[in-house]
Image (cartoon, rainbow, N blue to C red; front, side, top):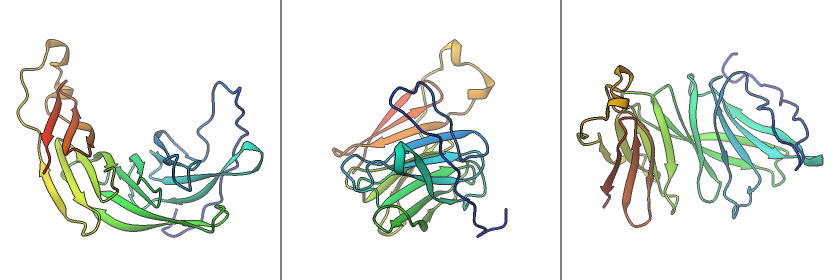
Length: 212
């Protein structure tokens, strides 16, 4: 599909409280991640999704308990692996196979009938695909992971405040001694309000940093 081409919103099946399974509609391939907007934000019922079809998609509640596609972008040009909302749900972050994290500004007409996502920042590229992107509690920074690296970015300047590959790990247990895990990958990271940065790694080790 050509850049800038419009895509008709996908029709959403009804989702009732008694439903035991739902369908990932709208995406044309694997859906890698979904993120619910923070409950205290004005978009508390909105959903963001990330897919193998290279798309970041936003979903807004509609009449009759349905959801409809409110906005989408394929700016990554590669599968999108992770999405997350800022605390106010005014910003959305995504990370994927293009080794970049992207920050989007979300706007709508109040009821979600007309919505857009506009790219505000591109962070990277890193040396590997991005596995995680998480806003800090104050919404001023973004923690990203790519390959074996972790970075903390200022959303005001778009500059990396800190970047560090994980320190050497102890020998892996036999169950992890697989060529697939010969090099560690960081699949998730969180930066707490107290300055503690935690990361989950594929070599069976969770790592902590004291962020200042």
